[in-house]
Image 1 (cartoon, rainbow, N blue to C red):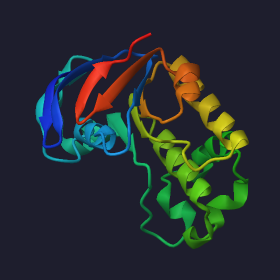
Image 2: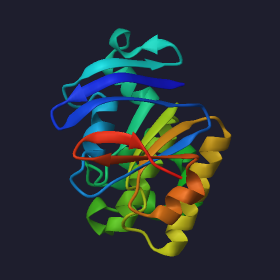
Image 3: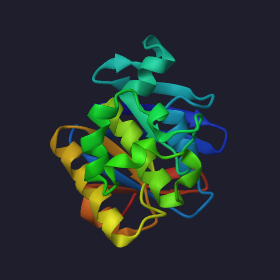
Image 4: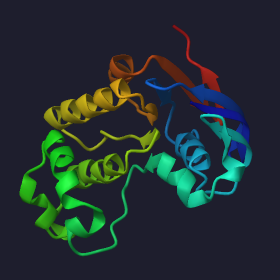
Length: 198
């Protein structure tokens, strides 16, 4: 599905990896090790070099907005640009079941963004990405601000998308979460990525 060869940018050593359809890969490492830098480079949000292919199509031949719709990035802190939550979704009706699956109340689309807690912002940011249905999800600490019930809901949605054939690369500090969701684990230290041991 997603093949990455010799991806490089300041703060990262040249990195090669792949993510198959229906596969979750966990990226683990200390804060400041380069996890977010790697995800942002794959999403083509920061200047970088390397060869990336999605289902055989080279990133270089795909307009950046189209690439980002297919390879969707969820930052650790989501951005909000309008006063109301609903303005951040393209189709409120289509978003409703996603929001429900994430244990959020249906009327939260009508809430002002300033009312949202950190955990609600995190789940609604994930819902925005889920609505776009990218082929690959790049998730940066998607449950870091959540309580156990919300974590369970998010992980259930991730598992469903994997079953549907999406590829997922997610950062986490939670070894138990990585064991639950990921078929493979990668380690990153000082910008260098390696396969985690058994």
